Length: 66
Length: 363
Image 1 (cartoon, chains in turn brown, green):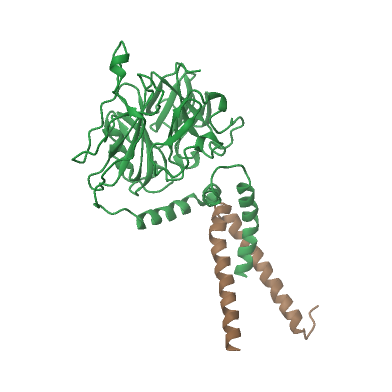
Image 2 (image 1 turned 45 degrees about the horizontal axis):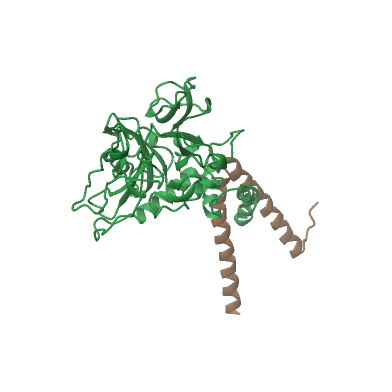
């Protein structure tokens, strides 16, 4: 049963759960379709590093803007 | 979500990678990582990246001429043989220089060992292999089939799935007889080829592929395989690698790129390459040089006297020819000084398979 009004924290947790399920499905798809773990790592590592760099840059810009 | 998916994907990859790097090996973590990617479905990706890298770093034609060649071996091979031997023996003629004036010692054979006697089992030389690239130097070794015995040695990881792999190095008990070692061919995964070891088929043989074969009577040959997938009882080992690059004294007319040349860098990419040929007297000839295409490697072997030849391993990480100046594997020396791997490479367990050359009659 879904309550009529949910707290912002609950909404965030729900969004995180949806994200986690989608990410797990995406990962499972990538792992099953790729020719091997080497191929998966070849693409996943740069994606992870770029994503982390993007998040870091975003936080830095936000902090500089005050 | 994408970041989380990437992280999830990297967990099993990291476990596999850490396990691979924790295995005993004599290569750096970076080369081991590239090998791990290759072995886990990433060979086409790695080859493509290598192609881009080598094409971007291709050498330029011309440049200042060399003033000297690297010194190989210990003595002029023709200095005392005629005086000491009662019967004349076959020695290969000097390799005719391609660039004139020739440099001192260019194409002249030298004994690899200080204690080789009147009939050195291994002769070494260097020469400039391409007039358009006057700084390229090829190293060539000639192995006297009457005085040497060739042995195939499995490495730590190549060939894969071998139960009794052995020490993956030259056994200490055999080092008194050791005169040379050199790299094998491509890994089975990329060579499109077969392997027979101790008479057992480890990978089905492929007709038409260049094959280094040793028969039970001790004879060694290089020729296109024509005996089907199975092992003949006469065969001790047979190592295949790609189509022949020289057959019946002529260069293979299809030395340009194609799928028959294995899942690796393109044939026209200039990179460290090595090859093995056989002369008309049945003696083996090894050649290696940096910045070679398959065609230029074939021309080096042809100029050195090979009538049939095959390409062996490529890239600086895998190309090695090492001679030993004294019994006991003392004073190992790379054929060319710029060879990347240390001269002690095969005196410790090595990743890939290789060949050991023992002198006959020394115990």
